Image (cartoon, rainbow, N blue to C red; front, side):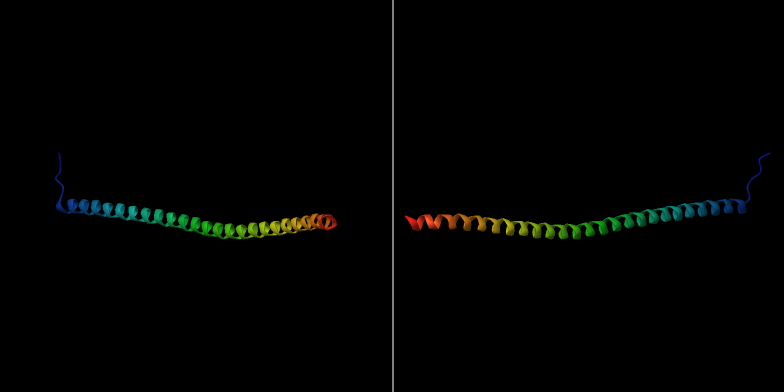
Length: 97
């Protein structure tokens, strides 16, 4: 024979279901916050890497420019020496004429 549920049992079942829903909402919130924190940590570390890389690129650009300036200075001095050698040979020839 089917026994009817008492009101107290129905209320306890409703309370249990409500607590299960609240627990599910809390678990979803905790999972969402955890995912958000993970994404923020990843973004933060990538930003730090990007800033460090930017500083490194600036340093390397300065080094490259300094090296190019040094090469230009060496080439200029070599060209000046070559020109002075040629002039030293040409000037007597021109004066002799």
